[in-house]
Length: 357
Image (cartoon, rainbow, N blue to C red; front, top):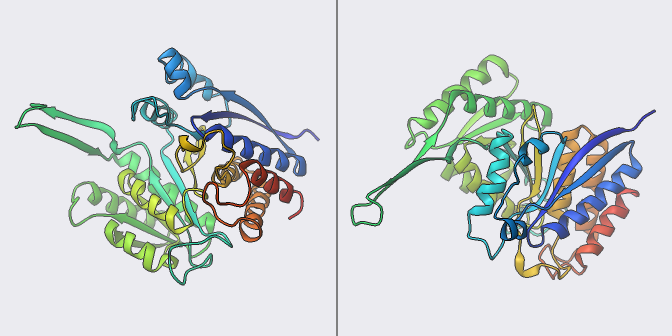
């Protein structure tokens, strides 16, 4: 019987990105050895160093080339010698928009042995998912300046919310809540009392789609400020949260902190009908580059999300169990230089446990 094969584009990127992706690939290869599938990795040198040499963020035809892959595995983007925004817009946002990765999927899950700043809360209480719209809202760049650099300057940034974009995000969230099958509760996070146009659309679509097609899912609503308070006070209230691009960007960083920090947080940029990209949430951390001390678990967890997306659910569950074993039994901390192990040693442990758990 021929093994299932998947083509994976690997973009190590900048700073510590290549280091953590290397450990992620190591763990994915361990999964390949145990389970009946094959990942064919192809590396791309997109990032700050290439940009400084060539002036290109993504080379001509680069996006079309990515469309030939089953998934993208990304390390980090951000170089200290490149002005902020150039690489982020030229690579990250370009991939998200051009490949129509309209869902940003962020699990917020506390693993055993990981410290959280939330008092009296543990893994049973902190386990929810944020579904963030990923290609519209304030991130479209719609707006401009009037009388720039004068005392009468006006800056306008417009949040773009289309019925199509809102509905496909909400529908994905309902489907995910049903598949997750935990509390079967979906919470819309918005600001209906102030953003009366954008979130009027979100709220109408949320209830129309829910009533018509997902009567088995409980619908809930919370203002974004209340959502932030409850994520800290009662994170166990949440199962799946769906929200727009800006609010999603904010609450997922709060989510990363309550699950133990950027060293464990991973996310996916999803196109359910196309090519999706998976990455650790933390940045490139240039001050740790080459020191073999950065925590690779977030990148490894991104690889676990990629396996689940590809349909390799047994391998994904096994990899997650291996990460949990490391957090519970081995690491002193998730912080760089304080783990008690090097980057390479953490990757080795997870890869070994993949064959044992």
